[in-house]
Length: 408
Image 1 (tube, rainbow, N blue to C red):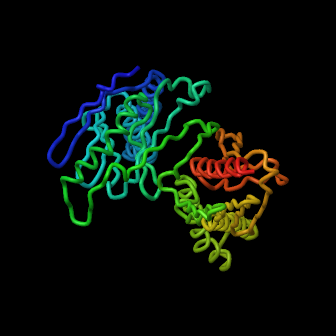
Image 2 (cartoon, helix red, strand yellow):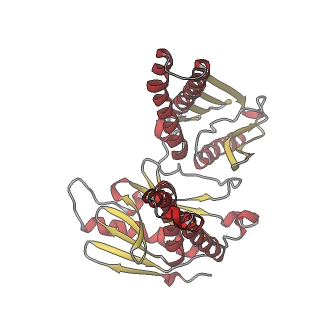
Image 3 (tube, rainbow, N blue to C red):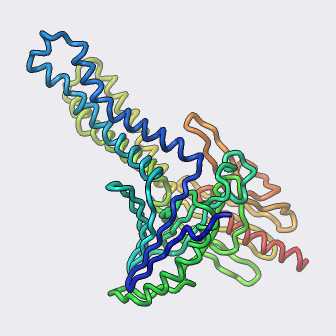
């Protein structure tokens, strides 16, 4: 059992600060230390390469003025890649090993500052955009080898009203996370009630939701309340209900990593279009022009595929309809609309399906609504939604199906 006295609050008139005692699990200490050593090694590579040039080059050649520039070139051409990487890794290692964390509240924003001397990291969320808090826990998955080492630890996440997450604390004791999740809404209410700013109203503790999610991809929870920031629309129709999943849009339909990669690829395509194509048309390209056209065609086809896939994901929408007789699912996108209907009496189970995919980059997981028996066993309904949203959808369907069974 962890001591919740690791939290130390200091209240002011228009702000408050909470000092969170350092709590780094043992299984993180060694990787963090090794990462710091790796960062130092990578950062020293340009200097080691320059030193190597001096040692292996004869003294007569070292007298040449050009040699000095050549020997120092790794500091520029290699260092432009290694120095930023080294700085980021060392910064992360120092903050994990020696950083002290403070939670800061004022009348406009929530901040979490982790500092170690001149090195710091800040995560912030405007209070006007705060929708609530989320506890990501592995407590229900202790039997999993991947999560057994976490012990009784969780993450605390601030969730904006648009669904975007700001991770406040990672892998802290459950007791600390639970206490913060309970105290922060009350302190925000008291603080915003004192501080009146233009265009901002007092935030009540009841306006801020609190929910729990499971870290393990295979762990599925029952979810009575709609997830914080979800755009799903629930329409009660008396004898049934309809849940509508609106279009996600470009920002929420893909990960940041894929968005950056796709934008980079499209910029490369644009560069080929404005440089290679005019050169090919003017006959200024040496060698076989056909090879240049093949390269341009391949890049163009990949670019078209990226644009179509992103557009399809952005406009994808669907609906779940439950009435007295049937369950109807509709999922539509750029390439068509899929519909299915089941008689309630024939449904054996509705659950959140989980599918694992192995690749060279590691394992990835897909979550979707699964109805049994399902004639289309390969169909993964609403796999573009978050797992927490699928949990809420399935809970609503199960609740209505159990009510129908009781009435029957």
